[in-house]
Length: 292
Length: 264
View 1 (cartoon, chains in turn purple, cyan):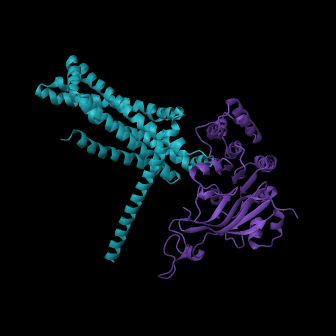
View 2 (cartoon, one colour):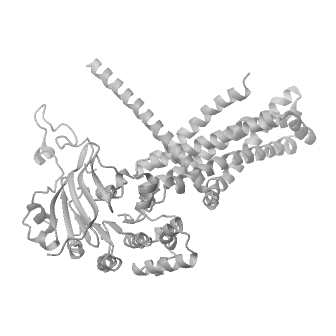
View 3 (cartoon, rainbow over the protein chains, first blue to last red):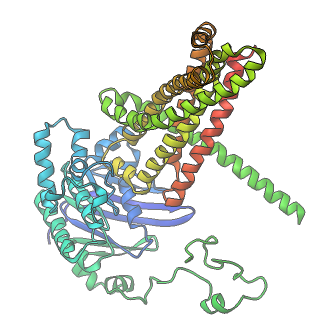
């Protein structure tokens, strides 16, 4: 059996809560060098939060996250910025700077961090834009791009500093089938060709499993399943089974916690009962998570 | 039951007090980090010039129009009061002192809060809501150096210059109405102004006021944008807060500064 690749990111005993609600309760996971690691889970399970914790945009309540041997939450600001130059992140919204053109957005990290001549910057930018199929869109402004195009520009920007790792937050959402296929292939090709480490957070089960070397499934603040895509298919875990096969019934509830449906629709509970207002009995604050 | 309500009211009051102190602390830390980011602008003056254009040059037209009308109104009001005492030749003094000491810095700061301050808050709030600030952080670019410091310094520089323009155009507006329309003597308008307006006591005190207002309005506008809830409603609330808070701070500080500068 092959020895597993060394971990670039090691997460140990991660606890994190927001507004008193626990998001992670003792998560341990490794993101290995040279691999595409997928993090999957139902909505609200904290997948994007995990990426922000790895990038030290959020601080955990307990536990450690180390990147290339350095605890990201113990670094000083200057050291953290040095480390972030080796991480690329593709935000769900693209996070392009709206006052800069596509070309300038991709050139932005180079202009901020290097003193390369314009000619070389142009070369680097155009090769990245060509890789994501948008070399011809270099003059457009972000407002003129579709959501999918914006994400591809953001991918070109994330690649331009040649990072060790790229974190993709929902890269396939809003892509048309052609772009989706190209993007799936692109993530895989970039990872292999550049020897990167990729972390893909996604809901798109089939696309993600097709490129992932290793998968973690997170639910209810814990890792409920992990393994290669083949191992997951055979794991027999009800969590994994439900998620991978997109089943409505299973350990992950579709409904947000709420009072009894019939009582909610047709009547009140007896005096002193929990059904006395919006969100009552659901463990949420009034108005939170309620359709308006 | 009433003691319960009293307890709740006290708890709410206490909570709002704690939140106010917390916010003040956040604002103070934000200001310190922004000021610490200013040296990073030295090798990149282009960033500052771009922002001076956005907050200063683009505000110039409304400041000029407002200054002209305020000067014209001052001349009208001043003339009808002074003429009863046969002192209409002092119109230049009345118009210039009112503009230089008070209305120039104050009205310019209010216009600046409404035009440039709200734009700064909305811009930064939207950058936060669309994850542009988080994106900068992840690209190892410090938003305090790249986004907040140039905008803060631009506001700080632009407001005193705009206030000077407001006063100058206001004095000319007063001239148009007083001399050209109402027949005040041309020479008296300018010479009395020249004789009575003191550079150190009047003009410099007005400059100090506009510098203080520039500092406060820029700080409030940028902090509100950075501290907003990153939703469309949050950005709208922050923009409103900028205009309201900045205006109230300008008026309150104007009283304090006037008392310190011109009080005996």
